[in-house]
Length: 351
Ligand code: F6P
Image 1 (tube, rainbow, N blue to C red):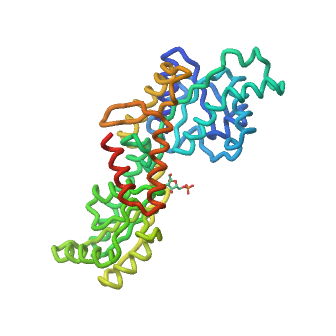
Image 2: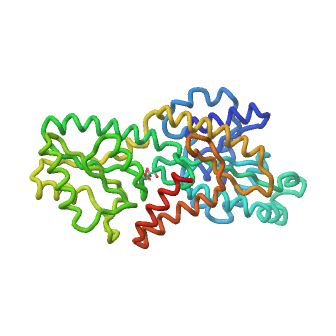
Image 3: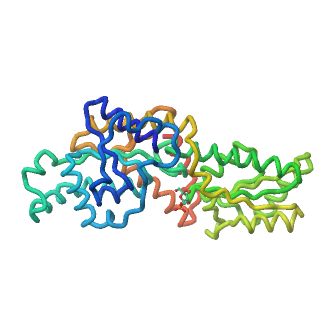
């Protein structure tokens, strides 16, 4: 996210705009004051390689309510801000689009209640919103990659490589749980990139009796001379009845059916820290630049865009359509319609 902020700040300045950083996510928008700070070119020096997010992030209950959004609108007007570039997941981006759709009503209310004068709101009739997608989960539809996903995948692969060495030494099995919330991208790609023996993901739950299928595959690998076994479980992995597939259950199966000396490793928040990989630095920079250009191109009629990457090209997609498609996958899984869930995920890559 830091390379994205850096790119937005510097492209804004290059285009003659004045950039502000809003600290602590929507909380900063609602609180205002020192949480909204003008940024100069040199303020974001060195941010390309910084992990996490230097301007902070927070879940904000008050922005979900209209009074909070009213305060946010007031703070923006007082600072003279007329465009917002938001970097987040589908929840943050939906919040931003609601804010934009309410904008005129919020300004009218601020004038009617005397919080602002008509003069202060004149010239601010339109709020520009542009979305950047920041999530390690790579769970947003309409884009091939979200900012952070490849850094997290890199970290997972490094960790699995480290585990590989000790698994090989002791001829052990490891069940490795990775993040991803309701999305299996990190688990699946980590499985491909590390040559895992078996992978569990939410979008394609294993068939009934998967225990025997998994054991048959692992047994075959062992008879071919493999001294280690790696099973990757997405934290959101489920079976066909929507019951979680837990790492401890997978371990029990490996111990009882294959007599493998098995350990569990939950990678946890190491997947969300450390420096960003080269791909993420590049993606965030190109998308940050495109986000500023999208602000400059926007008209009141343009639906809020989301900056995506499609077949290696930076693209603009209608933000709310991407959010709806993302939510459609979750809905299909809840209805146990796994074929539709997979088809929707595949379609994201075929667009
Ligand atoms: O969405 C990113 C993510 O890291 C998920 O993969 C994970 O489920 C969740 O956030 C963890 O959130 P928290 O840090 O609040 O526990």
